[in-house]
Length: 312
Image 1: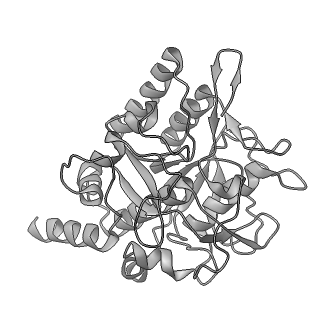
Image 2: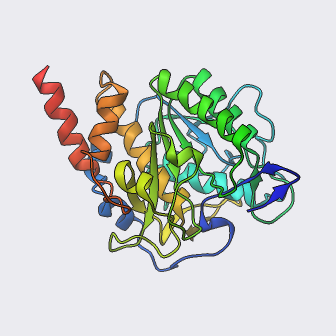
Image 3: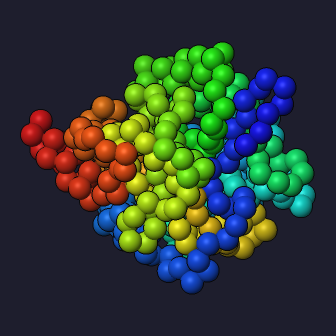
């Protein structure tokens, strides 16, 4: 978390930038915990169904990403990883592996046939926790929507309010909602109770981190926005890709958000005529009053959308 003058900055919302998690994790366990494996048998995602990754640059030359359709959004700066790759590239590549890694690789590889639109907000310059400004986040949201993304995955969080920055981000999120683009955002890893401009927006699905038992991780942010219309997803002991061509085990709410984003992309691949509101309701369920969200249940969302499709 940091400031540059009066500019609010956003930090990456995954533990991949700061600490490793349980190295003995089993790759299939996070997928089983949210009942994703049956849906992954039904679909690999649809080519052309675009997921916007608002994160760091991606090492697309990784052997387990070589077959993926990964594209830099037009006008995006910093989409190339440095040599040697820095933390921003490590962050983006890790999340990309969860989404579009090769099936059969150590990564979750939820929707490998989907198109990944990369709009980096974190620059691969130097080391340390990647940061971005609200303006960069808002521009990336707008650019991904304009490029045809159906789902956005946002891995950034802040606790420093800024009225002007809030208005710009709200406008970008309104633009996504107006175009029927689902927005999934990491709740953040500051162990706080509350919300911020992105997770507070009524269209956004905020995602808290959960451990292997489905309980919130100690550092995941919670609050009414997350509890009432958000979800929990795996955020501990997740194994995915490292830009050096290998793998790493990590966690955090960025990992959790990617599980929800990948599920949404698979559901839209199976039910292409479903509306954004229908898909969103199938994912998050009915209204509730809590600061702790339920765990993502991909199979339940599939059953809900199947019943709707059969009733048409």
